[in-house]
Length: 172
Image 1: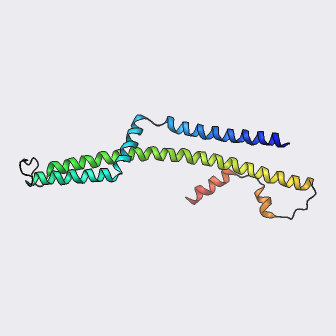
Image 2: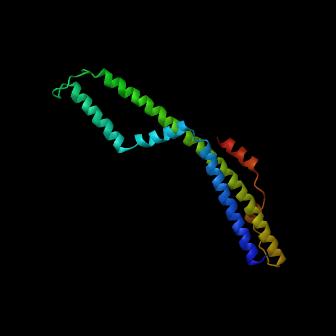
């Protein structure tokens, strides 16, 4: 194979890998509904110092007003601040649900990535095994003496995915 043909092969492989990356990104983005977008946006906003500061300021203001410490403003939620307790409880419920929605989507994306990684790893294992066999064939063709290497012989065997799956299930 000449240099030009080799360069074309490498370019083709790079294009194929880039196309695969784009397809994966596209697949992950297609499953992104408006609810997911809102949940992700809100989760990002809730995890900021700004949100924390805003909540703290509102609580201080609420307690100050309802303790009668702010002249000219009538308390509307007397101690023990039952209405504040309800508002904070509802806020906690909504925050929890929104964060869970976002985490569920992230978990789904992680599962998809894990499956993709597995497929790529299996493919990589097959290609590596094929390369080892080809290198050994080249060495034989060139009459290069090869030492007996049990580890190499083991690496040249096809990986039995079912055996690995069974071993993992046994360990669980």
